[in-house]
Amino acid sequence: MSRGGGPGCRAVACGLLLTGAAHAQWSAQVGAASDYVYRGVSFNDSRPAIMAAVNYDGAAGWYLGGQIAQTRLFGERHAEPLWIVDAGYAHALTSRLSWEVGATYSIFTDFTFWNYAEMFVGVSAENWNLRLYHAPNYFGRDRRSTYVEFNSTHALDERWRVLAHVGAQQLEPARVGDRSHTLDASLGLGARFGRVDVQLLWVAVDRANYAYPSTSPEDRQRWVLSTAYAF
Image (cartoon, rainbow, N blue to C red):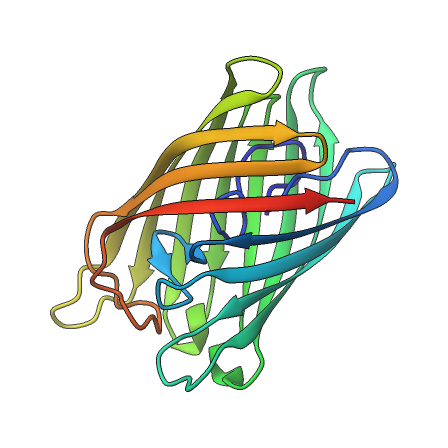
C-alpha cells in the first residue's frame, strides 16, 4: 500500500488500494480485482480477489494501517485471507519531497510458517515514490530479501492518469539452480469517479519466480483490472 503520499502499492492488486491523506484522520477502502498480484506473481491462482484496508494517518507523521486480501496459494484447498499490518513515520524534507521509514508484517491465517516481517525506507514526491525493503526471513524460508521499487503516476486530466512501476528483488542465499534476482514491472491507466478508483494494468515479471508459494509461478505477464471505493 502506498504511504507518505507516494503512488506505489505495498501489497497489490497493483495499486488497487487508495492512499490516505497526510492529515490526522482515519480512512478505509474496499475493492476487488481480477487477480491479486504481488511483485509480479499471482497470489490468488489468477482468480478474482476481494480486499479491504483501514489506515490512520497522524498529524505528527506517524501512520498505522491494516489490510486483508483473498489469496489462494500452493497447498491451500480454498481461498484464505492474508492479513498485513504496517506502521511508519513520514517527514517532509521540502514542500514537494518527504522521506519515510517503517515496517510491515504479513500473516497467513492457516500457514503461519509463511509469516514474515519487512522493513522499509523511502522518499516520496507528488507523483512518484522510491522504496527500499528488507526482510531477514522472507516467507519464513530462512532467506534474506532486498526489494527496491519505483512508482510513478502522470495525470492526463482531472480524472485519468498513467501508472507505472518497476521493481527489483535480490534473495540470499541463492538456491541451487535458482536465480537470486528478479525484475517486475507494470504499466497502465487509472481513473477516478468520485470515491471510486478504477485501474487497468499490464503486469510482468522477467522469470518464473519460485520464491513465493504461488500456484502459478511460471506466469510471467497478465492484465489486472481493479476497482476500489474509498470511505
